Amino acid sequence: MPKLPEVRIPATEQRLIEAKDIRSPFEISIALPAFYTRSEKHYPVIYTLDSNGMFGLVSDSVRLLRLGQEPRPARRTERNLGSL
Image (cartoon, rainbow, N blue to C red):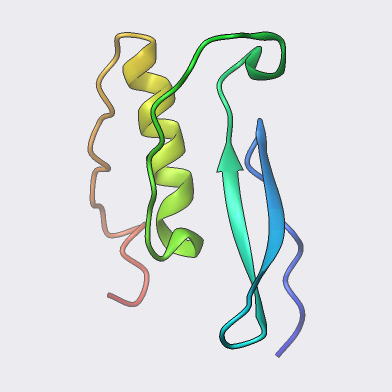
């Protein structure tokens, strides 16, 4: 299988952490609010499981909600159904 190009979500970062009990690295995805490093504010934390599949959806939804907008559901069409 060919290697897919790396894709990054703007204003996010990835870090490797090691689970000491099983000595295995895990990649975690982090999205921080704008100006986080220059702020004294405290922010709530949202944890997602299966972030490979859900991180983009959750981080973009939070950004839209902060802007006072509701995320719109995706429209299903024959073109974007793929092999479903």
